[in-house]
Image (cartoon, rainbow, N blue to C red):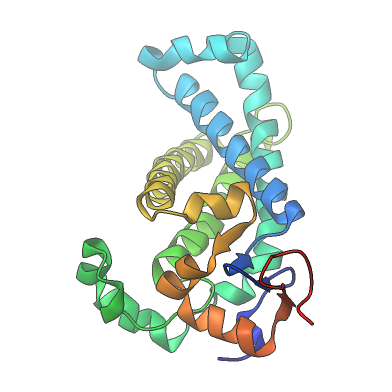
Length: 235
């Protein structure tokens, strides 16, 4: 447990009840831009993937508009996620407790938190999503640029374009699956969604799911102590 377990903007509010700031406003804006970009990219990509899904192009103004907009949404996704990566990669580096957490995946699924090791701001499952997204988004942008007809595809041979398109499609399917896992976990673990909508979580949630992070905050982090009536600093 060190200061390295704390992100800037994390803060402990102690009063009638404990509230923990988990994400700043800009981190949440960055997250939702990334999330919306990924959804739009998936819909437009599926619309171009198979004739049976062509009806999805109506969401973007037709086939031509969908083909034109799709790669630009990919650029927005890449730039937006790069902001998240730069900010959070340090907190997502593997730790010793991650292997222990993964070894108790059965207890995770049963919600038996007391049998799990104490973890920092992110557990092994969240770190898996982070690094899977990082790798897949990189693959998507590289392969997507390769097949971008207007700017880059003329520099590749037909066999190379076919490989790039296959890789792009496989990465797209994989990232949709990772996104589904991410969204399911956000709803499954009660109180998690609040972190990305309001920016904070309850002290009970932090103690139950990220006890090492809460301990680090209590020891090294920024803290606001409120009076019993919650109106200001205790005297």
